[in-house]
Length: 152
Length: 425
Image (cartoon, helix red, strand yellow):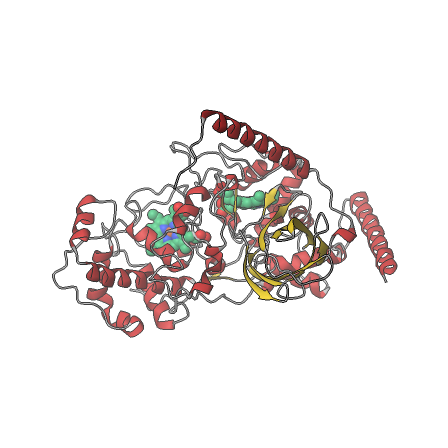
């Protein structure tokens, strides 16, 4: 097995890339501080992914999403045509755009339950207000993100 | 339906405006105004902050003796036993004084030496997934095992404590935890502590015996936790006020708020955004935040808070997933899904409960801020953090508003419900 060696050029490029990424993130962070809450129709438990590849539904444990309690959710995924999507790699991320902070925990998709349902563990929200939860979905059809806006 | 509620909201706003006008115009407070001034959304917030909304005491799957009465009685005695220390003078109660709400009123806790941080109160900690200012323990029982072997707190070690249990508490111990191990041939002192001699003695003990002693040590923590779980808050004036507001009862002297207290409460849940972090019935989100608290005098290096606490709890000897924990793998979700690294952890400290905080000067994780007005002035200015980034933004409140916030914080004071100390030595 050969391990790729990093040449001085590629490490410089990597540093530049890192810097650009950091600057980009800082910019996004700064903008999001002034972000306004999205319109009513951007909220809800059913969303289409950013470029339209997938449709997703979140099913929290109960009717309302509690503050300050670790929760397990079910995420239902299907293709734009409505075929359930079982075979996908999904990561979870989120935060409060108006406060510039992320989720208090690092939730993860822990099981595929069949019929397009996926178990999400470790969800937690530690204050009321506007939260964003983003699922990055990667499957044979491609990569896309589904963004949920929640008002707790 | 929607139109109707909008109309109602407009009406409510109108009523509020008229009342506000009346209040300021006459300089006096219209009788019973407090009961009509809260919108339904505000009433929901008030309810969420009230002790009546506190969930039942959560079970602790990592400690199967947590709700055992005999364990709690034993734990209460251990909590106040100064013989569990290197100099025979320090117990948990030395720093956690029941008569001071289980804290000590000094900037840094003083035991065998001086701790690096401010003593935290005990009440309500059974609700928190994280213990200590940096959350480096994930249960009350594992927390208790920290100070016992800390060179500046109790200064002792687990073999010494095992001998103490054998000498004074064997019957009580065995009635809860079962057979006590044979200590014959063990040195008087040994443990994985800072002291090189005692550490070397510990390393010479056979692994199977070390395991037996460590189990006794863990059980000491579990008994103490069973006691601590029973230290609880009782309703404060704030809770009685909320109860009356929600019931729309007319004010009585027992549950009324002054105009300043009411205004302070309004600021607390509104303009001052205190409930961003101090929320729920214990007025804490049990999470970690950098609030730009200045470095403690003479502390080098700078306390990095949760950055180190997160790393420590993940591999702590007594964490939820350890062999000494009674939890199943599915019970340790808080630890499993915890954020363990990232810039937001730098100098982030656990949000303290604000119940009884007004009686707890000096404030913050190393007692850096001496008085309540100075705390409020800190929030008003929102200074830059000495490291990491403060989450606060300047509030631009007037002197009067700061006084009102202070008046409100003082309504959160109430006596604690403490298990009887009759059985204590």
